[in-house]
Length: 137
Image (cartoon, rainbow, N blue to C red; front, side, top):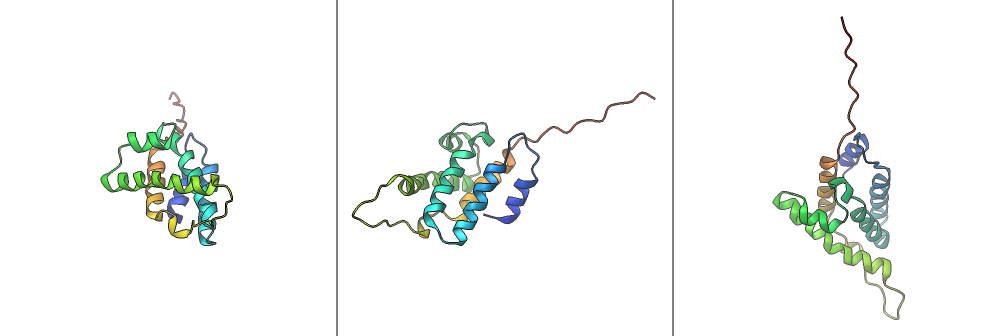
């Protein structure tokens, strides 16, 4: 994912803890660079399952249905739901006599994930900053 976006997430002072999201995104980037399609599928699934609280929701399906995205980003976010099936395949298909056919080409474009993460960043509530006490003259 976009390094500047990751840096912005790291710098965000929010009420939600971002350590797990940042770890998942970092591991996704590493596994993508190393061309590990199964790990990428599973990590993407974990990210989709992890981010709904940033939008005040419980499931990714609720995010897709209820969050007001622009037209292009809505299309990207909606398409990410299609990749849940690939992740289910990577996670749950047992060994068989047929070879597995998942490859790096089965992953969504990074633009889709960057759009999601940008909306996560934009939706996160910040930690209220303490106000300086007013002193009487």
